[in-house]
Structure formats: C-alpha cells, structure tokens
Figure 1: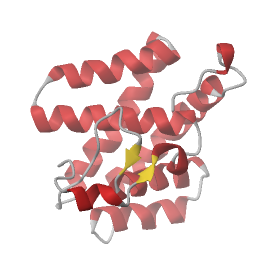
Figure 2: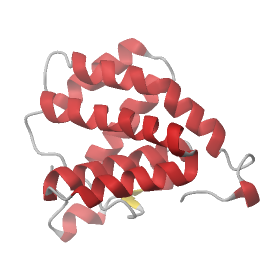
Figure 3: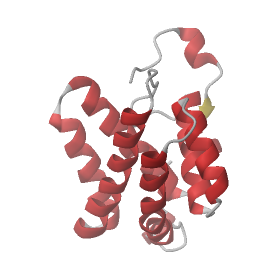
Figure 4: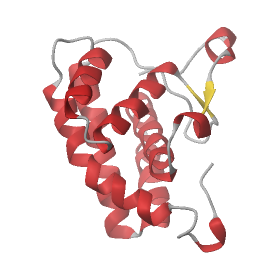
Length: 163
C-alpha cells in the first residue's frame, strides 16, 4: 500500500464528497486510510487514530465495531490483492482511483447487490474470485448502515458533517 508519489498522480483525483455517498462512507474511508498508514509505517498511532475518530462519532462500542469491520476489509484486500494499493492521508479531501474502487465496493455491499459485489471484489483484487473480501464487505453492511443513520446531518447536533 503506497501513497501517490508524483504530482500527475494527484492531478485528476476526485474529492471525497464527490465519491462517498454519506458520512458513513467518509468515515470508512478515513478509517481505511489510517489502517493502511498503520500497515505502511508499523505505527500503532495510526490505528489509535482510527479508533479515536470512530469512537468520538459513534461511541465506544459502535465505534470499535465500525473500525473492526473496516479493518477486516483492508486485511482481506491485503491478502487477496497482490498489487500495490494507493491511498491518501486520512484528512485529505482527494481520493485515489484505488480508494474510489474501495468506496464503490462498499457501496455495492450496502445496496445488497451481491453479484455486483463479487464482481467488483474480483476486479479490485485481480483474481477470479475474492471470497474473503466479499465476506468482509458483507459483514460490514449493517454497521455501516447503522453509522450512516447515526451520522446523518439531520441527526447530528448542529448538522455537523465530516467533510
């Protein structure tokens, strides 16, 4: 997992708010970025930041469950994908192509488009099938939907949004 290295890699990147459908997807992307940074740097502070952010927004129990689901997705991606993966820093407003694919994968799961999810997981990993990634996304659907409901701008105090 590598961050983009050249200016041309960053030039045509989309914005988080244009790729993510709701606050839960924005949080999932931020958590995935912290987890990926933790893998890249071997620094536990990255993982702590993922937990801290999710717990602040969702509470200790739901926040930990949310992070665990995103970690499972990233672990599955690391196991089933052989190529490098590019990601941005957690607070960056831009999204790499790989991150767009990840958000799209999560979105297919949340829409319960199971055949599309399997196809997208295979495409992301470069394999015929990616059963571990599919299972991780399927397991994350309910926690993501619960987070989306809790983080909806109308249910947040003062309409605070993440991005």
